[in-house]
Amino acid sequence: MRNITLALGGGGTKGFAHIGVIRQLEKLGYQIKAIAGTSAGGIVGALYSYGFSIEEIISFSKNLKYSDLFNRSHKDAPSLLGLGSLYKHIEKLLGDTKIEDLKLTFASISVDINSGKEVIFNSGSLVNAIKATTAVPGIFPAQRINGLNLVDGGVLDPVPVLTARWLKPELPVFAVGLTPQMEIWPNVPKLDIPPYVPIPQFLVEQLNQLRLGQAIHVFINSMEIMVNTVADLRLKLEKPDVIIRPEVHKYTMFDKVDVDEMIYLGEQAVLESTKDMESAFSVSNRLNRWFKVANPPGMLVSNLDDGLSVSNY
Image 1 (cartoon, rainbow, N blue to C red):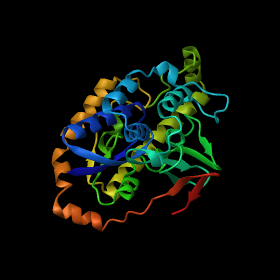
Image 2: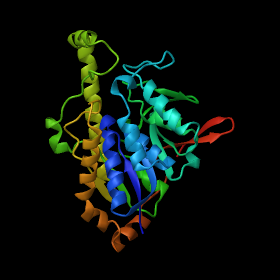
Image 3: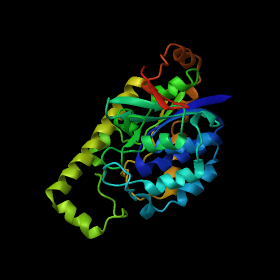
Image 4: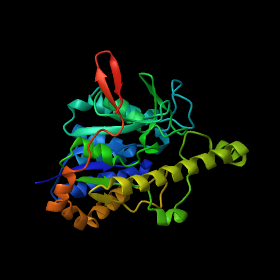
């Protein structure tokens, strides 16, 4: 039995590639026993861990309307865009499900901007965990939960390898990165305000011509460089057993993508990694896993009767 743990990275709409990765792994006979996810990886990982089949997740993904996703609520923290409609879809699917009740072991990653520490949701409200891990700083509203001011885990942990290893120390970690490799950074497209957001296009064009609009572009693209750098460094340092990289670098995290194409790219990336995947189960690699530290890499968020508590590690 080839049991594995997945570390699913962030990437906005590129995250649909995770669906293809999981589907191809299933076809090849791999059994996913745990998932750690950041941002888009947190959404796909949560849905799969809940028990939805890949075909059900594909159906959900194809029914999303880009023009409806980015609505803001008057309750939202300050941000450029909102994710109110996406959260409504997720709440309808998941209700008040607790992470500890999922069919698979699951954790999502966020960052508390007050303390600067990584926060791991491995119990408590699954919907809250998704909201916290998808709150791209400045773009989508931060989530205030029990004194924490939480944003997207990609700030510190774009591909949560250490958390995945902590969940199931005895299993190989297959990391799925959606950020481009360093050598192709000059060729990747720059982020922009997408045309389908609920802002009149003439206002977007006017904003782009103002110094404030230009400053927003500098900020957004600087964030992208930071996330790419952190992802590259952490993958090199944390050494997952396998790195799977779908060829999605021609897209930005806000692009309107074809779901079928993203799924195909995810499947192809798995097929191109089969040799590494097989070697992950060699005797030497099994022994190496026994010597790797598997402590929680950040703060754990637990669900108690009186609310959320945070433990420092």
